[in-house]
Image (cartoon, rainbow, N blue to C red; front, side, top):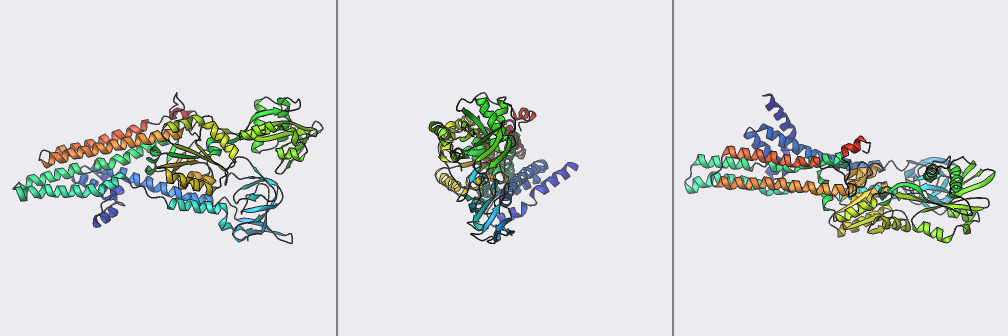
Length: 613
């Protein structure tokens, strides 16, 4: 009795929300997945198979929960975007006075002040001051972008240094960030709900089975003079064997096992609707910064000039950057430490907004900055043209270092490409992904240099978020299944427009992770080809389970029609097939090895023990 009570509670919780939908579909004569599940549970209860009924109810309700949770999480993307732009702007009036005004109330052409470290509240044009702005949240650019009068700035970006006076060019409702928010919502609204094959099959299967059972019970006695009790018994046998318990379980239990295996591998798939999609991927779009690259600059080469050693050049550059937390400063200091260079902080250091740094060391004036900074100091000709072209052609950033006498050397900094990116792209091509495209806000030369190094097919550079959406829409129009991998807020609209989206979970923004259908909980791109293989294996097992279920049903339906089946045989076959499809599905739990090159990789359990996950 205790067991029956527990099973009854499980059945109740599994069907009490589904039963009204099943009743509605029955009244409309439009059988669906809900009706199929209720029929399966009712049939099992009628036979006294309470364990089987509880199992069906549990797995079906769990599957529905995962689907609804996925949709709810995706909708949170818009709310996370709203926190990017500050709610107020410090407006500068014609009489020189200032006051904080709600951003939504700032008129076009009004001027506002943005201090160093502040987020920019509105799109606008710089009219006074100079600085460097972190535009990664909007354009995805990996380095700070110098800004001076005449340059455009975007709401939600961060002013890194200097104070800017900006003229508002758009109202708060029409900024690039506001468009991103609208595009994410619109793209999700255009998503068609995934209707599983079993649900479609149920519309035909359920009424056919019921009609066939009625026919077996009535036709032989009425037309052929058969015994009523004998053919009624055969009709009950048909209902038992046709009870679609194994068929209903086959997909949800496989999906749950696949989701569990992917979670062990550090891949969060937000619901069963997105398990099948990776296996059918034909085109893949990738962001550059933080996806193909690490999103962290490094000193790729040191080019000393005029007889200065590489160590002396690094010591000079590091002394100026010793007190800075700028990303380029961290790269220079890391290289100095790796080279064993002793660093002494320069004196009287100051930032020249949008240009570089100045200071004093050993009684002489020293400086560091862009080639434009060197030109303004009258030393532009000291940087060899072929060196400048080689650095820019490689997609790197040129940093000149010098003193009052001229340029003493050049540092080449670049955003580090993920070491396994080339091998991963090759594996994706081998898996049948025909087109791999890079979408980035970085400049054309930098993007093409990175793409050429890792083997990417197409490059689209200098893109704003709306441009990325356009690029994805073009891919969607020409490919059966398009995926987008990204990590920034600027990627969110394009990710939402793709057939499915993958976020870099370890380095990605909240908006990208919430928008994505799949999140890589580490920044390991090797999980993408693993995901495709895992998806294909999952679908193979699902198809096996459906095939086993239907083949068994077909066999016993045939035997029943000729009066050769028994009730006990039907029950044994039904329960046996249910257990078989569950066992087959659970094989997916063993498929969580991440391959890393031709030699394979470590099981995720070992990676977790080492802190990799």
